[in-house]
Amino acid sequence: MTNDERDTMVPGGLSRRNILGIPYTLAAITLGGSLANGQQAPKAGTTPQGEHSASDPGPENKLLLQENPNSNAPPPSDHGDVGPIWYSFDLTHKRIQEGGWTHQVTQRELPSSKDLAGVNMRLTAGSFRELHWHTADEWAIMLYGTARVTVLNPDGTIFIDDVGKNDLWYFPAGFPHSIQGLGPDGCEFLLVFNEGLFSEDNTFLLSEWVAHTPKEVLSKNFHLDRAALAKLPTDEMYIFPADLPKSLAEDRAAVGGQKAQSPVQYTFKMGLMTPTILNAGGEARVVDSRNFAAAKNIAAAMLTIKPGGMRELHWHPDASEWQYYIAGKGRMTVFAPVGSGRTMDFKANDVGYVPPLAGHYVENTGDTDLVVLEMFKAHEFVDVSLNNWIRHLPPEMITSHLGFDTTTIQSIPAEKLEFIAGP
Image (cartoon, rainbow, N blue to C red; front, side, top):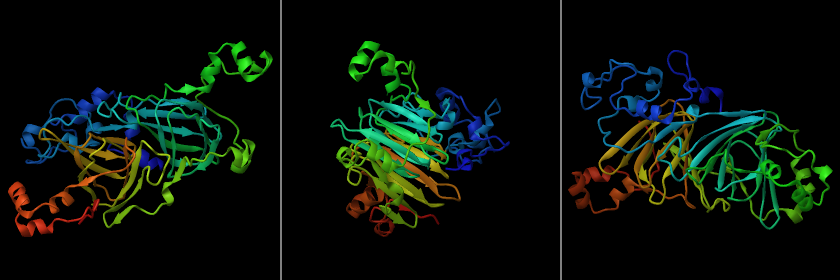
């Protein structure tokens, strides 16, 4: 991901990165207020009340409002309360240490998202996210650079591998693991956890365990004398710089070679897989427990939507959806009962959310590809197409519900397309 993609510029020469530290309540009120107007006044008919009713002569944060025109001047079809469906990593606090940084979007920042949480992290070359484990499963995608990952199975076998851009890994809850940036420039990655209230600041760290265990116990456990414990850390390390590791082959040999090798493959080369779905409107790579056996509790799809194209109207019958926008710009409307609809705009480094079973689409509103991850707390990716449903019902039933005549009904695509091409 380039700095241009991450630093989407807005009028006045400022970037989304400059709009930092805005608490969730302010962001939600400002971006969610259907009567707020931060850019050019909407044309009459843009809102049900017309141009004058939508005007805002009072104070307003124009830069923030201009980032989300479909919230600032919502389409007339928006109605009711769906709840928050947008947040951005660029609004979160960034924890910076020597060797890298991290920030997160969890249920604390996006209260609607109770199933999944996300962490964005950067490690410089050689630097570690220290040995640790946590209460949630960890799904990850490399956004930039390369890293070496390790994870230990309870049976004592060890998995070690190198990952690059668009590669995935999956670490089950409670399995100890590590991540180390490789040359030449380290790495950046997205982590997704199957706990909405997960916190990257609340993990089980090796450094803290040894710091808070009596020295005589450590000496007995490690079969070491007290003098050997003198250099143990006395506080958390979390992210810290280190030398680059030896080659992957040397590291694997050092831990026992084939005899100690994990029988489970915890990494997956998503970038090299053939698209699961491909048509003129876009493509999707679906990764779940069917093709990545280790990923038992988190399913994913990486979408590339062509300019003017859209992810068709659909819903997921078994899970909520947590989205991460990697490149481009788009918009999404979420439908929920009773009679509620909410439209928001999304750009690189934004997070989207769809409540369980809620109908929605994702449309590319830019002139470049829109790339977005769809994440689910589920073992398999499942969706239902509105078009597919309509065309598999008796025509008279559709006429009764929607008023379409037979000829009109036959114009609707009969098969699940996943993507609809632009004009």
